[in-house]
Structure formats: C-alpha cells, structure tokens
Length: 92
Figure 1 (cartoon, one colour):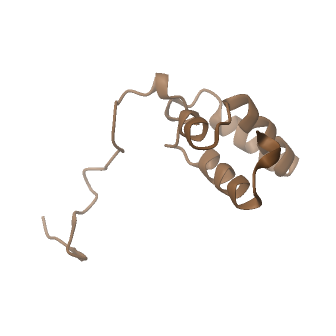
Figure 2 (tube, one colour):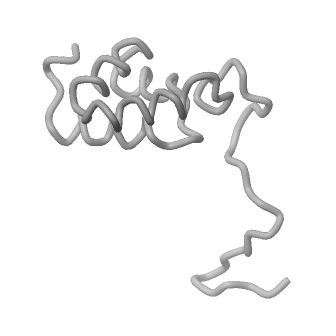
C-alpha cells in the first residue's frame, strides 16, 4: 500500500509519527500502514540523522503504543490549560 501514497499523505504520516500523542494505531487506521511500514517510510523519507533522532524518541514511548497507554479515550489536558468559550479565554 505504501507505494500508492500521495506526497500529501506521506507528509501527514510523517507529521503523525512525530507527534507524541498520536499512536501508531491511528496511522494504521487512517492509512493502513503498520508500525513497521511507518518505520520504513520514515527511514526512506528522512535524513539519516533525523531518522535516528525520531527512532530514539519513539522507542518505548507509551503514548505511541495504544496498548501501553494509561488512558482510554480523549486527550491529555493540563490543569493549567485555560478553557476557551465563544472564542474568548474564560477566567478561572
């Protein structure tokens, strides 16, 4: 499947792979690429130094593997993050 990806889809996959909170399962669901295929794509599309930095960052990271995550749904939200209501930041 990897060969039929458009440049825009490849860019999006790379972006999702770099995101800490996007699990490989999301890439599998959206683009039908398993973790191993994402690794191959990243190796092919990135400079060697960037690929090594990405691999070091991703290996063992709980948030990249849905089975290792300690939350079921939703996204992490810091208690210090302000609420946005009707395009205005609401006061606490």
